[in-house]
Image (cartoon, rainbow, N blue to C red):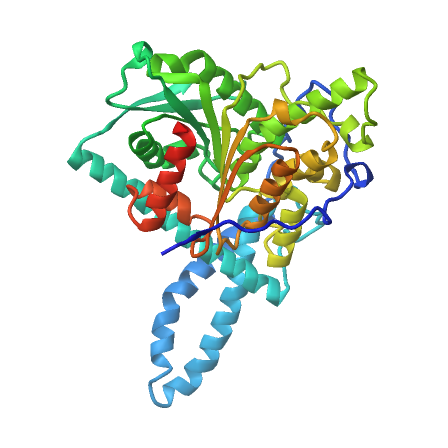
Length: 461
């Protein structure tokens, strides 16, 4: 059983000065949204290499069990055992190279001939470990989706779903789904329900993540007695980096403010939620706006000196007016991009991760997309009153994808600027996907029930 602990957060000694960070790219001007990268045509040699390695890894994985059995056959085993050792070694390289060919070619270092892969044995092992971990969680996520589909067919729906609603993104085919409890009275309900806008994390090769998280929307709407909105958000590389994702998020929030009342929701009680990198997105939207507005007020009022790093900061898609957000819910979220990239480098997976590509690629842009660093740099400004006044940070103590210190530091910084309602829970026996998968699995288990109770109290206090 996972237990929740509230940990003492460390101090700010690791915080970098944004103004001194290296910057190899041009910082976007204020009130503009940078253009997303253009995806260049993939070299033929990369496609051929990927196909060859895919065939080898598939065939080698299927033949390995039979070869292991043959190792126990007298005499024959003497010849098969070296072949098994060679095959395992080749598969260690093959799996990591396949991961690089699938995930690491965007924004890769310049290569003259061969595609970008790693030949470090230790890094290959770490990449293989990450691949198997994500495959395991991916199968669990898919199984929950299929199980939820069959469950709804047998037990019937408890939630009404309004799906495929265009919300106004400038990018094509961006839609959202609204999950409404069946006992909701619609716009005439005097006790309008709170609304959770859950930003689905980007999953490789699945540009429409909202569909995979449909069981999460149904469960949250049913158990928490709230309206749940799950939108499509731009994905890298076709849809752009974090500026385009933040623009989509702001447009979604505007849509919610204008339309949620017709579904029985309260436009004054909108909570923005996310998991992992989408947790960063949910946090950065209000933090960036609050910091820039507080900075502009300081400049106009000739107040405290503005750090150089904050002078370049802008609100992405500022022309999209968004309502006040009642609170932030962050599941295993990233709050310090720079620290997370260093952590991924130590894990050996930074080249196949999306975080550096979406939030970077330079150190300066990574810091400017880090809520922790923005709050620390603006700690002497009047940021508090421009932020949501409620924060719920939930993290797994066994999370090997995002350190739980990310949430702990976020809590410390928010408390440091006098945000009083900051709730942090670290569930000691839960990994990166455990909390979300538990909430998707019809709330079974003590940890899922504890998280559900936390969410209910947070929404209805």
